[in-house]
Length: 106
Image 1 (spheres, one colour):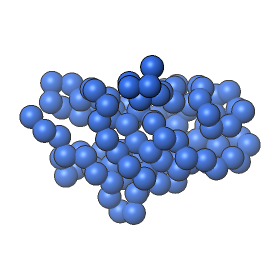
Image 2: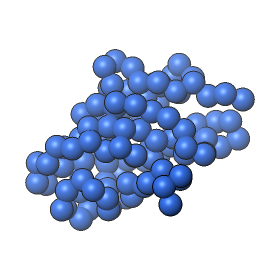
Image 3: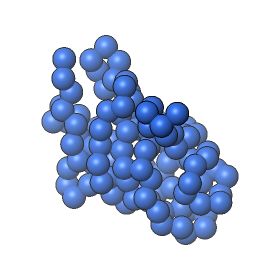
């Protein structure tokens, strides 16, 4: 079964099978990774640039700004959900996320 992923509305949404699922209006808690020196970093996403699947994980490239220090950066590999039994399960942005490296870079 294939899953259709794309960004909508100038990067404001991630669409899964033609249904808006993930919005940039959420604050994401990032525990580690190259974004800023804040631990954790509370990042308000501004736009999704790309979305793709890496194994069962749906990842996005996004631009965001840290609410603590004001750094504005691109996140190249943000897990936003998983594909489980052919169904998309979104990640809760309030849970602490690690900015992960793609599976092929371990």
